[in-house]
Length: 567
Image (cartoon, rainbow, N blue to C red):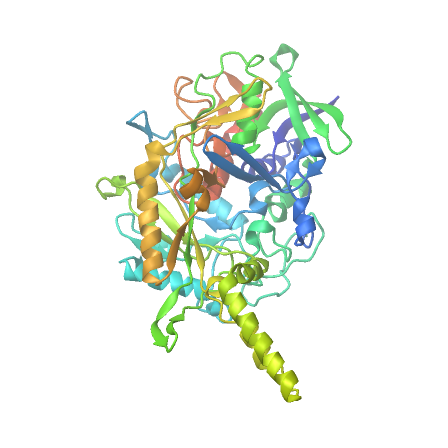
């Protein structure tokens, strides 16, 4: 049996950071990632390609997207080398200083770490991820119209513009956040599609390009502009000697004889073979759903696990809506003119507004963020077809002009007719998705059914006031854009929610009566078993959680390195 100092389950923001930190000090590290590796140009774009791009090993499908449906809520996470960094929207926002507190059963409870303790780790992660602010003041990036449209609507609602590093928690503000995207090479002007200069050749051994504004961040960046974890932490971990195995899904683990670490068994896909390895320390970084599932399935071999295991689930307040068919103040003989938004042009998210929480001085409020969102250009064509009345009208005009030309026996240029057929659609060109998130109530409970599959009991009712605030501001943004407001149909019709930021289940705490791991990610009562992912959050992060997950993992690694030295 192969033996390692540390086995890490998962390669997302927790696992990737941990792998590099431990490998760089000489530890023998094995990373087990259930999904495949995705170099540039490997993300599918056709309907047939997407059909096979879902994670469902029972059907021999080992794709990127793992979509699960639970009571009242669906979750979307990633299976691939780099975890959620492959499909997230690149946003790097630090958790608000006043928000390191979570309501538990109606009582506020402080997190066992503070913003001041995390700040140096935030710094380290931002440097490693190559954080850059969207260069909205530089052409051609200044042509991204959704940024200006969202900014102007926010300003009309009283949100003042500021920079990401000068956000005042007591004020309503709009800003351009840092993004894990390369817009320009160091010391050079931002240019779309320029070859990225890498100090260390990435583990895929593939060239990368600066952001080409294609809006495909959430379905995999085929040009490599997204600074996903495979291009930084995992590349450096491999260079430092860490072994990384993909399509290796951990199914089982148990304490080794003599309490000397852990025995870990994983299934190698697609062969279906079982491989066993041993580790002095085991780090679960399989995400909120994956790590919680593994611990719940192994309660019988892990004595005295916290009774809080599985509790405190939060969707980080995720709420999707849209402003449809925005208009300008001007009008022609047919009515108000469309306001071009072109949400498929640019990174998926470029800007955000922040609303204060009661802890910031906004009495009776739960804080939230609202961000302009986007989608791939291919979706624009679907929206064009979906605008049936408008499309039908343009098609009828096109056909009538062709008929007239045939009768008159002349052959004018088709340019103007084709232009009329393809342009002028307010739905595809003038609509903006809005993504809200923030401090919902973390009252969900993860468990197992009789077959050992994960269950989740969750209700939106305790968070109704929070969701109402997010919806109210989203609706007001749409109104300022003179657009039609659309809630997520799943929410309005079926009272179902969707989260791409599942958190909790293995919460940090000072004792096992209140949480599963301590402030260093060590499972209470099991000092060689660690958790380093979104499951350790005692509640919602508020903003996009990826940066905070990575910063905590960086902090956890400090302690694990010290513990290994002591032994």
